[in-house]
Image (cartoon, rainbow, N blue to C red):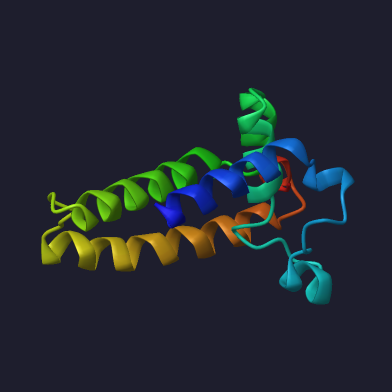
Length: 126
């Protein structure tokens, strides 16, 4: 319950405070030191936009905002169910192996593409 309350409080905080106009959120350390946008750059801004009903702006900040938020909710839901004696999220070992390979690969490719200065990839920058 405490984890769920903390998650809800964080969502309310992000919804009420615009990360683009605020110093209340830390900057991306990779971007600060290298000027390179990582795969996660724009997730907080996108989450803010999504929580305020601006789907287009959320996707403009980071294409993976809905995917990351869905993964957080699914993980929390599975963990909560198992904590109360229900069945949590279970995956076949092959699925875990594929995800462990595909997710980092997609993150690296997305990072490279969003840092290319040419169209259409330049639109992937946050």
